[in-house]
Image (cartoon, rainbow, N blue to C red):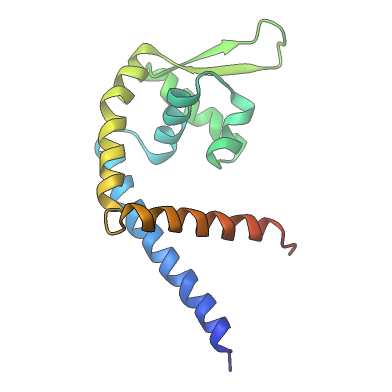
Length: 148
């Protein structure tokens, strides 16, 4: 029989998974209602906030397999939301950059997304949010130290 500590760890996993699922479902629905999928939104959001990025680095920054990035970038480029820019100093590097049309789209969409996330997390007050952030960051960093 599992010890109480082990049971508590399982309960934490379940509660964390359910909370993540609940937030993601509402967020993904909002994103899709605005005619992009979550991966396209993640690429647009990265470029919108961080500026021009090498295609090779985007996958790691949004946790997506590198082979999928080309497909997503192609779709966004066809819609006029981003542009590809060749590196003037290294022909092996191609950058993705948000276009004026993509910026206008995100200027309208991102504040609504941000507000929705605020509303979704309003079950916690500011102090509780700070505690949750600190605890989840501590948990994530501790997992990196484990080797499986």
